Image 1 (cartoon, rainbow, N blue to C red):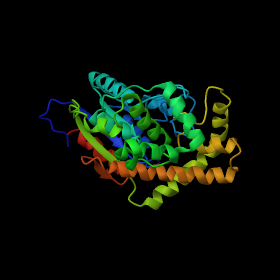
Image 2 (cartoon, rainbow, N blue to C red; image 1 turned 90 degrees about the horizontal axis):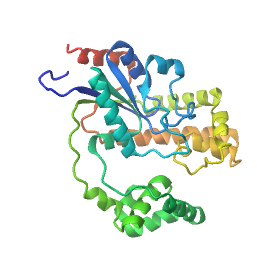
Image 3 (cartoon, one colour; image 1 turned 90 degrees about the vertical axis):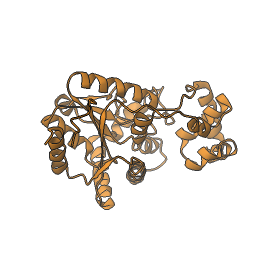
Image 4 (cartoon, rainbow, N blue to C red; image 1 turned 60 degrees about the vertical axis):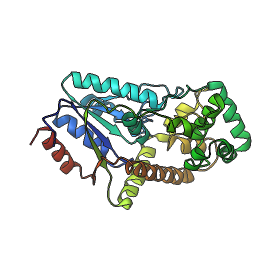
Length: 314
């Protein structure tokens, strides 16, 4: 229940693994109460990446507008720091309009950065990144992981040898500054608490098999809706390539490799489903770190009713 004695405005963080029903719940809340949605999804920020990110269609977005959707071209980068700045700006605008920010998504790093802030680290260096990518192409990312372990064993211990994006960033920070990424994080000053009365809601089916079934069904729906054609349309753009953060997204990476002839359509489907299940597993692990989160089983009608009751002050 909302604490009416505090001057802080309310805000909801609605978190959960992919295919857990977050978006449908958020849309229902918008249709029933004074909520405005801010997307917390690293894939939905990109224009033209609609099917594979499960982006709401135009009709749904007209009924329940989502901020931070379609704000970047797939060839551009979008960082967690940029998300935090954009989200705080939009939260302030929503609050000023007398409504409640409803932040919805499965990019757990974005939620973490929103709550905790980021270490003041150097900006990305495109030239150095290109050099690291070229070295990885020759030696492989496991070799780059071993290289990181020699200079930053703490970061290397928490990263998998094939986690190219984070390995690249950790090596980049060390090359630019001579200081390990783990040291930057250790020296980070605690972020000031957000000026909101936050409710953190974690939505996840208690039975993992139920989530796996939803993931498989949804991936098949994406294929039926034209995911392969969507990726093919992106692939013809000469400035886009498989190493971009946008094209490394789950689903897109597997379809891109299929279009490159690495495996057939049946294998692509299996790999896409498996990669999505692994993503959901990582998201679930992240969720456990949010100690203030209230866990719900994903029963949309019951949870929507409970949240409406809370915001009405009953």
